[in-house]
Amino acid sequence: MTSRFDEVIDRVGTHCAKWDKMEALYGVSPDDGLAMWVADMDFRPPDCVQVALQGMVDHGVYGYFGDDSDYLGAIRWWMSHRHGWEVSPEWVFTTHGLVNGTAICVDTWTDPGDAVVLFTPVYHAFSRVIKAAGRTVRELPLALTDGRYEMDFSAYDALMTGSEKLLMLCSPHNPGGRVWTRDELQQLAEFACKHDLVLVSDEIHHDLLMPGQVHTPMALIDGVTDRLVMMTASTKTFNIAGSHTGNVIIPDPKLRAQFAARMAGLGLSPNSFGLVMATAAYSPEGAAWVDELTVYLDGNRKVLDAAISAIPGVSAMPLEATYLSWVDFGGTGMDEAEISRRVQQEARIAPNQGRTFGTGGESFLRFNIATPRARVIEAGERLQAAFSDLQ
Image (tube, rainbow, N blue to C red):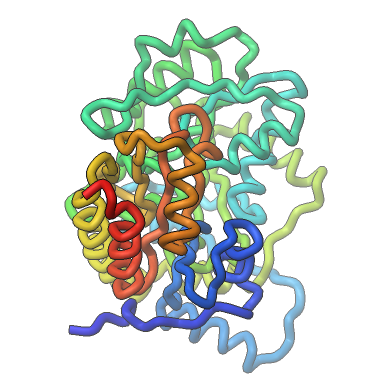
């Protein structure tokens, strides 16, 4: 049966970073290349989002946004029904996406020269924002155990210097696709308390779970509420990242007041288009779409994993969440330049370079599988051809 996600939509020439910047950055032409880098999807959002936007267009007046009660109600409904987390409306701040949310957190709770803790390899924008703000990145390397990442708290205390003020968690993990267990999150909460760190949990991928996986919001972990900042967004879930709308959700009154003061000082306010799209998406119709999406993504995962497993020395980390396949080429014995040459020049695929995610990512490439299955099949075939001498 054909899925709505099988439709190939031509995004070239639409000011789309994923396809229109690919040749300049990777030397891969969109004419015959496959864009598998930027973390957005090649799918249209659910119809409820399109209808809501069409309603704005039909009305034709794009003034300042006023009453946000429906928007906040939709967030509360989604977090309660999808994640078992009860959110009060006064906890919610709307930022210009979660990279912006990260930057404001760094600005609020650290000073120049302070260190921010990252479990690496991890989402590259964290490091970029931290360094740009004149702060230091404190890398705590994830342990690679039986082909998947784990947090090694027995080793982390020795790496701390006392200059750390903030800890950024990516949950589920990007790029490794891990869904952290409740026990792991509890240990993390204790670590943050021990070192007196504000804990920022970026949970933007929390809806993109492979079948059978269960995500635990950090907000449901005991003993960490007084230092916890949650970050969520509809943008990754529903492929509306261009709306640049994210939420920083802070249960603790003291932290909330500090963040509110910084937001006021920066003069930030949300985009009305993003609020309308998020309100429409966080609905029963949106939920049904996500359920269909994750089944489709799981099918794409199986296709790419099967193709990769046929290449000696290459392996994909088990994908529990996200639509980002983290593939290790280290077993080939090739250096990074040769791996990139084969993938980009021979296979004509543009993935993300593993090194950009920090220590531990050097032998990896990250492939975005949120694209019609025909393209994933094609990508697998191209990779096998590019490494055919190993088979």
